[in-house]
Length: 276
Image (tube, rainbow, N blue to C red; front, side):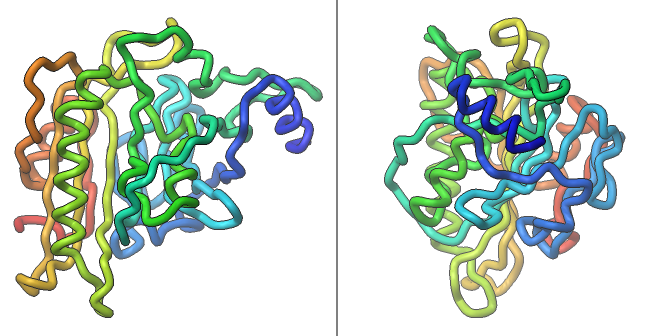
């Protein structure tokens, strides 16, 4: 049956990523520090969705390997977050079509409804003020294949173009350089764990896809220079900008307090990443 769905999607012009919609993040838990996914009240607990009719767990598989993990909100048609490991800098931009996840689509006999539970490329056609913004940015990927894997609709949200190419891009670049400089594993290889997410807003793209009110990101790693754990969090409003600047770094606790006011009470990272 799944082959029929994939065939239908390809015929309709929607390239598909061979990811896996799973019951638990245990299949791809290594993208979370100490294999511990976040806990978000009413959303995710002990690696399991707390509302299976809304929040879907995706182990993003591409070219035969898991590349990152995504918690996806099929009601709002945007991800809650994507989780990935930063291990190297790859500065080239791949040129591939944006992909969708066939397993998120409902089945009716041999028919499918592309876009019923996720954004599709057509939502962005003729769009001049909103970009398709990555949560796991291709600029944080370690190589070409990992960069290509980020081009799935389930890893993107509508972002104001000036914000996406302005303060958010500047922050992605500064965080990348910071992690590249400071973060090391026990073998002295680059390693940081990153979560990037979106807070749903009150407007929709194409009357379908939620336009987030805020974007947030947080990383944690072992700082080989300080010989201690390091974490930093960032968030900003998804709005038009005239004079973009990098977003100021905050603590994990401050980010969780912000998300509690805007979203749900949450515990994002391992205990090692707090009060740093």
